[in-house]
Length: 513
Ligand code: HXC
Image (tube, rainbow, N blue to C red; front, side, top):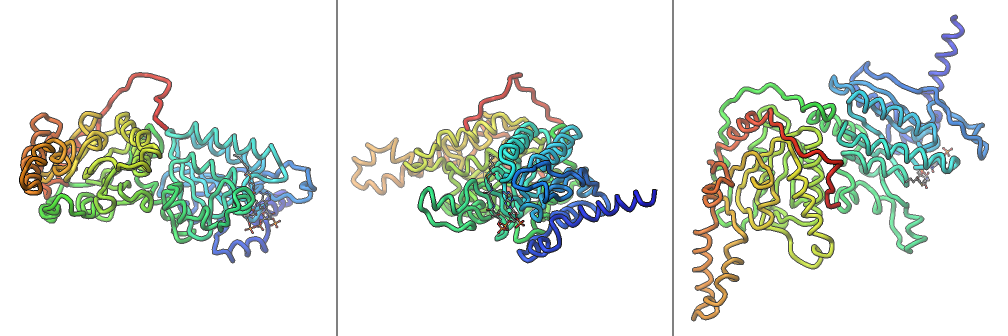
């Protein structure tokens, strides 16, 4: 028997070597950790169990039978992260550049099926040259098997993708279907076609970093939600993200113990500038409202006129969507609308209540926005809020103008509690624009049009630039003193914790994509 145990140990040792020492050193030289090192950082000590360690590819084309590595370039298994069951696959770049073969795909699919059947998050640590070129259509089929499962698992279990090396071709579409993507700066990139193909087809010269590095995807395309300076920081971000999210769509996020305390935040009483055109940083408001150091922003560098992220309030995990007056006056445009819509839908999938902070002058006008589909994209956010059944609370801090008033979680589209500060202005548009339109003739006929306009602006502001008309109709439930907001929110979220809403049965809705 002893010899059999020795044989087993030999095979295990061989599998642990991946593509061999030289390739491991090459990986380290690029400041990248190996797949196994990454998993070790992610899971709780001693919790990791590997599945399919001895799987080998079955390819015989191009002499592939002579080169075969145990595990076939992907490590799959399960462990706990902060005590919670989590399924993880990590591609091993030292084996055929982490490229995806038929068997490599089978290992990932087996894991995905287990994750779905057992209702636990799936984390993919991607580091792959894409389809294994020697395998042709078998590899393409393998990718499609994964994409299909990503789609079926969407909204059932949380799926998080780390991009920790090259991800080309097929390797980008699975992450794109998952809920969140985290890219490592400098050592990772994502593109459908790389710089060489770009040069051939469009004659455009672009580096891999420029085309699909973390900065490009964090700021320009919005493909990545988070970035990290290195592998360790990337793993820590995934752990932090997981802490706000439940295991699956049947569960709610875990509440932390919290006892209601002195929740007054006096700074907020003097926070909103006197002039409604002076910008301020909504993140400062968020940090005053939520539990200390609990705000975890996602999609930070993309469409920063809207803020989205997770936080805790009174120990309860929530998602926050907030206009940012600091950037483009917090206006809604194509990118901010789709950014927020996707976040709202994620929170709704996984029973995470929503807090919406509103200071929005409207939708951004202009040909660029109209031709890029502000209508369809703005409608995404409207749709996302309207269909969300999680507890939803809004707070209007200042402007809530025009269509953007409706869109930003208004009472009319199903918000549960709508608060406003006394500084709130709820109107079809700002006082100046409104006066210029409705009093145009009077202003034109006046001896001093400027003075007349100012007079009319004042009149309009007195009539509409406050929250009381909305409060009289019950569109705003309560006008509150800013310093008391945190206490109000904690109590309201607690009051809403058993909220249940049923929608009509249907196959699925048709969000304006
Ligand atoms: C097989 C591959 C491979 C691949 C890399 N390798 N990519 N083997 N299939 N797709 C192997 C290399 O031969 C090499 O083997 C090892 O992995 C490391 O690769 P290097 O080139 O030495 O590494 P590096 O210089 O870091 O470059 C990494 C890379 C480059 C940028 C990923 O290897 C590359 O461009 N690969 C091809 C990418 C690609 O075009 N993939 C197909 C996409 S199409 P040795 O033995 O030397 O260690 C696709 C279609 C799916 O995915 C569509 C579904 C929708």
